Length: 354
Image 1: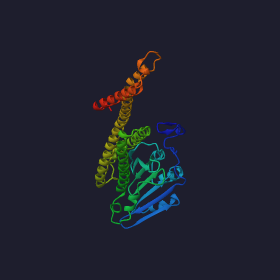
Image 2: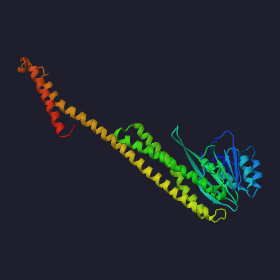
Image 3: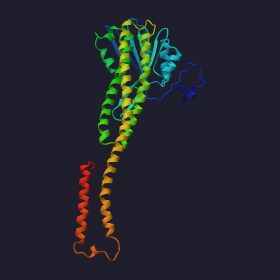
Image 4: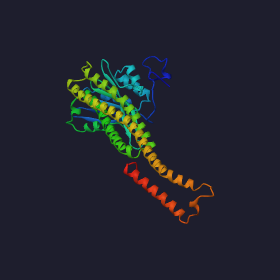
């Protein structure tokens, strides 16, 4: 049970009390640091959180500390203490039911957004919360599990001439947000292909499982909509925030991400409209197929009505019926019945009823 985004177990605790809200998605917390400048690059996994202090004391280095796994509250609390992160921020980091937002503090900026991955085997969306805190020369990111969309960002660090190596951590924060938004495009492209394929078979072969697929896609669109719409406010907040931590050169790039977010939102809304109309098309297709079946059955029944009438007459048990003892009576009746059936079928065919 959740009340206002918090577990009932949090009720009564003081503000800033650190409690992990969400599922445990890793067996062991992984901490990775990437320290860099235009000439030097260090990329390593930390065995202990205390190891980050040696990089903290190098003002000529920018560094990015990424934590995969949020159930080790002691690690997050220590890391927050090293960088003077407010307890309310750490509380939000641990609460995985946060709405995407941006908050500006004196010495850092905190942003939280939703990273969505598509499981190709299960065809299901996986939603993880990503918290990003960046100050003058450091950036802290917190994820629920290992595996993210930041591999391309890490690869760009290998090039000494890359902008990531030459710019500050605000530019790195922009790249992380941009990677999340770009991944939305990949997911939407996949959905677009699936919806197009679904549309092709919707009219010709509507099946009950087709409706179930449409309903699943509609649920996925709701999930995407809840994740993307607040992201627009987040990026807009970063553009307008009055802080020296974000340079004017980075704000230009943020405007580009904002435009991409609007495109994703428009695509989500378009897909929602298409899926809603597909339900109507599905029901119309079923009605059309039912009408076609009923038309065929009606034609068959109509053809057999006069045949049944003739058979019924000669099935009566009257003694004096002259045709009963006629030698050619049976072939004549069969011939008449065949003629009637063929004539009616030809008539229906000319009227395009069959």
